[in-house]
Amino acid sequence: MHPFGQESPNTGMAGEEEILRLIQKHLDDTSPPPPQGIGDDCATWMPPAGETVLLTTDPVIFGRHFDASHEPEHVGAKLLKRNLSDIAAMGGHPGPAILALAMGPDVQLEWLTRFIDGLATTCTTYNIPLAGGDIASSEPGIFIATLSQTGSAPNPVSRVGALDGSSILVTGALGGSLMGHHLHFEPRLPEGQWLAIQEEVLSMTDISDGLAKDLHGLLPAGMQAILDIENLPVDEAVQATGANAIAQALCDGEDYELLFSLDPQTDLNAFLEAWPFDTNLCPIGSVFRGEPAGILVDKNTGTRIQYGNGYEHFKTTD
Amino acid sequence: MHPFGQESPNTGMAGEEEILRLIQKHLDDTSPPPPQGIGDDCATWMPPAGETVLLTTDPVIFGRHFDASHEPEHVGAKLLKRNLSDIAAMGGHPGPAILALAMGPDVQLEWLTRFIDGLATTCTTYNIPLAGGDIASSEPGIFIATLSQTGSAPNPVSRVGALDGSSILVTGALGGSLMGHHLHFEPRLPEGQWLAIQEEVLSMTDISDGLAKDLHGLLPAGMQAILDIENLPVDEAVQATGANAIAQALCDGEDYELLFSLDPQTDLNAFLEAWPFDTNLCPIGSVFRGEPAGILVDKNTGTRIQYGNGYEHFKTTD
Image 1 (cartoon, rainbow over the protein chains, first blue to last red):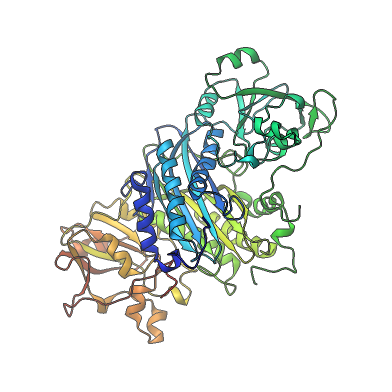
Image 2 (cartoon, each protein chain N blue to C red):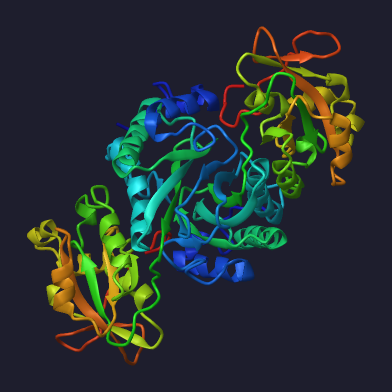
């Protein structure tokens, strides 16, 4: 269904309190009573003693992250999952989340309800309390839901830390986002939590903007990434299309897979054997000191890999 | 200046990375290096051991919370201060904040820069690290900045807890929001922190939707609030206009003052004498069991106080 409409009951005909009641009803058990949940000035949370608190925020925006062709339940689920992917990328365990809604008066209450249902179901799946938030009106045609997600980790893994000679590995398969993976993915929480307690893991990130772009975030100053470009783990559906699968794996973005570096001393085969998950795990290259720094090099040809900029959320002139 | 324009350099001509660089440059010292700050998948924070973590989110939206007549620096400052007021209302000490921007390609870079300058200056004033966030594009004419603010408190004060016979007190003066107070206020952080460690204080909130509406949040089931309506602390500028000052004090909203209840056994004069701040502190009434419950009663006439619904953020049909 379309998120916007004048004819049906919409948010402009309801007041803030009516919308809030509707949301609380559909959040049900995922919304704890105050002061932990909705109804007080702040949500409260007692993180595990001695652990570092993690904090991330990501929105879903109509026309940008979804459109009228997407099921509202899937949009609500995506909002939580894309934030959980950031928690996974630090090796964290998720805590409560808070939701800020900015929407036009023409948002249909049925669409909003189904969106909240999808968010609530996903909160239940991952055991996330939805602990508070804000509702505000914006212009017609606007729907922006911004989630802020907490987490905690005894030893969070930064993007920074790869060394000269580090292997680079990736979970899952790349390039399927435009074929639906951007809605139907699993944030790699157990994988990230396991990786964070392996001392061989030096740095980690998730792939939200595309392998090529996000790999730059792992590259220390003065280093290049040497990639086995022929053997990237490309999504089967992408391979089947016969399109430029490698380009999609490098640049499409929204894979929400984990990308990480290992200590150069690591026995790579032993590490792969110790991997306790069904999720695919694939070494894709290494990091080496080299000039010019900051580029990706094809392992087989020794030439610089040419690619776009990955997924730039803001660029309107591409 | 107007936030939107086609003629000058605007965000649509820049990419996400250029905007991010601009923001980081203007945030300067308020943006710590990663992983505490911008540049990793999550911001990290080590809250004080044993304290409860607080979490709140509030946006500033063009056309709703500000318009082209407001200085962008003041809008940036307001974004942080309205979130800090929620932390103050629980008696918390603020931790790091994260910022989610959703804006049209016609947002002028100069306007955005001045907005960030105002936010950064205010972060410095209150010693808040701006530790991360997200930038996303929206439709032309849209500017929505959503801040999520952390805090911590050894003993957070909920809205719930007033008893039969509790006095109700308020800090500062009410009703000046439409005359500029909604931009130029001080979040009552030291006052909230002090109140949170007084065992006489049973419950607390901040006044964001107007005294009449927010007072309902403090009312336990089955109780009424008896208000000394003639002696409400009304903002001097409002009194000078000769307008219906009491109605403004009850309903305008965005006062960002603290409203709290005391244990009925409290020696009110001793409590007022112990108050260590220059900020005005005023007893405005009491909570009593009575029928019908949930109403406000004029102490002097014994009649029900009639008022609007306070400030409803969403209602478009008023």
